[in-house]
Each structure stands twice: as structure tokens, then as C-alpha cells.
Image (cartoon, rainbow, N blue to C red; front, side, top):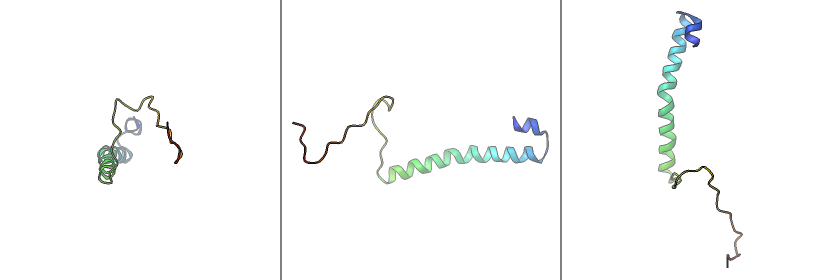
Length: 66
């Protein structure tokens, strides 16, 4: 949209270069973050999904559930 508004100028070329840069670096950075998490031992959650999932409450040490 911005390229059409700016017309065929240097601004259009810069906008296209920024778009290509974001198109390439977005998935690359996502892969780097996910790979770093897996290498450090952080595993993705298992199950149907996180919608409506509640974390398990923490019990103070020394208290038994029974």
C-alpha cells in the first residue's frame, strides 16, 4: 500500500527492501529462538492445546495431599 502511495521513487525501493528483509528474517529468527529453547532442554507443552489450560497449583513443602 505504501509503495503505491509513494509512486515509483527511491522510497518505493527502500520499502520493498525492508519487506524482503522482514520476509527472510522473521522465520529465521523464529527458528533460532525455538532451536535455542530445545537445546537448553525446554520442551513444548504436550496435549490438545493451551486454550483453557490451567497450571497445577503449587503445594507448600511439608504438606501432604492426604
